[in-house]
Length: 170
Image 1 (cartoon, rainbow, N blue to C red):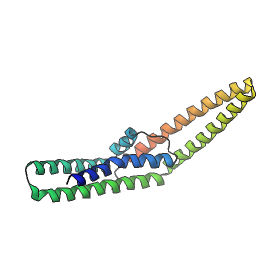
Image 2: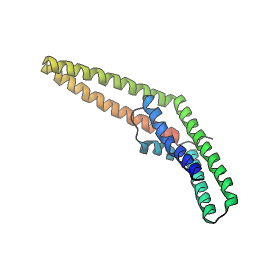
Image 3: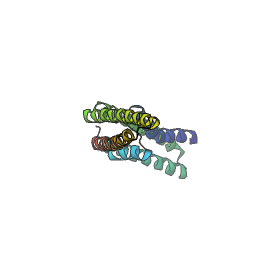
Image 4: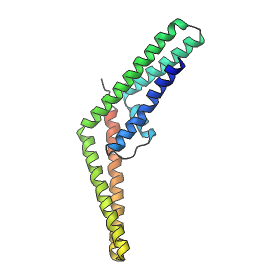
């Protein structure tokens, strides 16, 4: 029983981590676990799934403490089913986000911002090494502008994701 609880707990706990890794690989920028939790917490379907799972674990603890061994298998089956539902709903949200045009435009803007920042940083380094102080001043200003634009576009993406995620999945 402990092994089953541990495995199910790990499934739930690692879902946010997997979403974060996917987010970073897809060019969505760096996101902390707090932000992944924020997205999960803003979606009413995921909130209901997490609440059901929490209730299931509380019921299992109560049945174990009461010595109700007949109910333990049923409780574990309910936990497994609700954990699967949570995973399915997270996957559905992820799929829906991938097909959301606003989110995709935001990601495209971030990719453009990153490329521009990288290009300007390379130019800055080149001008620094060449000793071209006038160009270094201009390049430094361009890099600062690029960073600001990247931060602005990253904030917009996060807001658009939160807004989208706030709608129920079903």
